[in-house]
Image 1 (cartoon, rainbow, N blue to C red):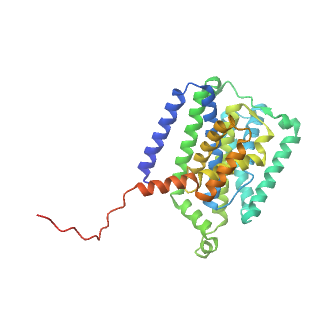
Image 2 (image 1 turned 120 degrees about the horizontal axis):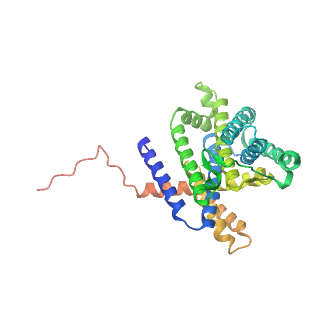
Image 3 (image 1 turned 90 degrees about the horizontal axis):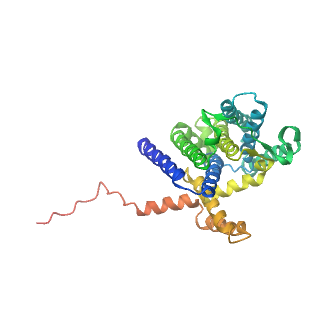
Amino acid sequence: MTSRTLSTWTLVALAVGAVAAFAIGSGTVLSLLTQATIYALFALGVGLLLRQNGMVSFGHALYFGSAGYMVAILMQTRAVPAEAALVLTVGGLTLVAFVLGLLIVRVPGIAFGMLTLAVGQMAFLTASRVRGLTGGADGMNVEWPSTLFGVSISVLTRPSVMLLVCWSTLVLVLFALALLLRGRFGSITEAVRDNEERARFIGIRTLLPRTGVYALSAAVTSTAGVLSALNTGFVSPESLHWSLSGVALMMVVVGGTGALWGPALGAAVYFLAKDLLGDHAQHWMAIFGVALIVVTVFAPQGLSGLLQQLAGRRRPAPARADAEPEPATR
């Protein structure tokens, strides 16, 4: 896909989101779509780590929940303006992830996943017990100012506007990641992922690319956490729990990582199943679990990989340059 085509698709996606945000009249539907979009961004961060590093994280809720808490604490103390608080939150958590990544990305396989799980649960227990700072198990409200980036907070938190903000953020993050991964950084990280020993042999320092991907995935996830805090105005220790990381990982498995947008598709399918099955079945997670097994067995590359295969079959085969010309008929 060329840069022009990518830009065109990005503009189309932004336009579709704008039309949907103001054409849908149901507040419930808008709220559901907003939540799905936020979790699509969360799953995108988890999927990016798996796609570029081949690593599975069970603790990425650390960055999702910490973003909400960091914003809430900065808003409560009024230490910096609200706009600066958002930038500091995403930037600070990205820096923390980079420093942490220098240590844990050295550990291969399941041990990496267990380390991320342990670090995430430490943050969950800390947030649950430090009641004076975080509100403990009760959580804490985010005291947003009257305006944010020059827009009234009452306007910004309207369901239609909130959906537009979250959708635009998701689309622009996908666009930026697509451009980044098409360049040298994407080629190096893929080479390290496929064969780290060979990458070292040809002179690539593998630690920094792996750490960079981990920090980048944390930046995407923390952005989702900031949007969640803006959407709900509340943050609790449940946003740090490992089960939330597991939900995001399920979205990644369903959507697949063959395409960059695969995890976002998985999040949409998850929330659609939750809305439809939740009304008809008490144990909808069990039904979704069966569907997850079916997707894993029959479509290991996820729904995005399946869609790409179907699109490839429908696309006509290019004509061979060396094909013999058909004899002319009179």
